[in-house]
Structures are given as C-alpha cells and as structure tokens.
Image (cartoon, rainbow over all chains, first blue to last red):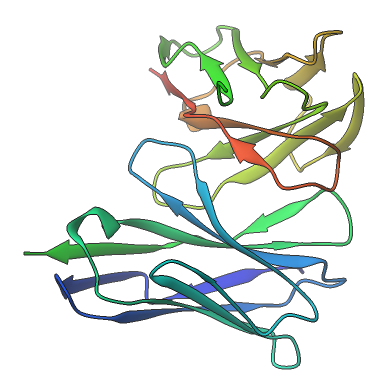
Length: 111
Length: 112
C-alpha cells in the first residue's frame, strides 16, 4: 500500500532555533515529492518540489532533501520565526495525477 | 491574479441532507482536484477533472460526485450526508493533470 509517514507528529521550538522534519514513503512508482505548509483551517501552500534526480532544494529558510534510494526526505527550517507555526505536510506523487499526503507535522514556534 | 476560490467558506448540514461545494480554478488552469481533510489528518484524494472529464477517483463512496463546467469551475456533490463527512474540503487547480497543484482555502463542512 502506498503510504507517506511523517515524524515527529508535533514539535515545539523556540524562535530563532532550527528544526528538521522527516518523511518516509513507500509510494511506487515515484514521480515527485513535495513539501507543503498549511496554516490552521487554510489550504496547503507549496514550499518545494523535488523529482527523483534532485537531492536538495531550498526556498528561503526552508531546505528539503531527498534520498530516493532509502525513500526518505527531510525539511530543514533555519532561524525559525513565529509565522512558521503551521502543519508541514509531505506529499508524494505517483507517476500520475494522484497525490499521497502524509498526516503532517504540527510545528509550534514559541517566543 | 486571483488564486483558487471556494464557496461557501463554512457550511452546516444535518445527516441525510445533500451538499454542493464550488470551486473556481486559477485563470488558465484546466484541471481541478478535490480532497477531503479530516481534522488532524492529511488530505485524501477524491476526484480529479481535466477538460471536463473525470481523470481519477479516490476511495470514496458513490454518494460523492463531481463535475467540471466549460469555464473549468467545478462542483463537488455529496448526498445522504453522514457525520463522518464532516471535514475541510479542499479544491486544487493546475494547468494540466501532472502539473503543480495550487490549493484553495477550503470549505469547512460540519454535519450534525
């Protein structure tokens, strides 16, 4: 069964600190992997998209990595800000239109 | 440029009723996908439409149906509502079936 699992389920960090979120997937065939940020009650917003051949991609303070061999990805957030408080969702695309979503990591950044 | 828009924002229904949710894609986008997001979980794929034709369907019962209009807007219909249908319903649009999807703000449906 195609699955996307994320850890930790939730995370609390102090403003200014860095953090890393993890994603493991069993989706096959694999097309691409995306990280989304979702504020409570809002639609997800894309942060990064990586294909099979890409190892890392950055978007400002967000850096995503992908190891297609071990089927693992991570999202690293540097110098966290209060506005980073949100759910971060890992999404893996099969070689078609279908997106498989993880359950997300809920991040809370405290002053 | 306006993003994906959805209406209504919130909706309260009772069990057994029918509901219609609407989505307008980003101008120029021809594909619309619908997702159901239950509180605390990631979105689950319901449907994708491209050029007014159904391209894919997730594991949802026949109570769920959708259509896409000539202007590429879309409706999601749910019949015989159950308590378990309470969720945030997200619409996403993309230029084609395989392109990046942009999400709308969602419709929060509560079934009492």
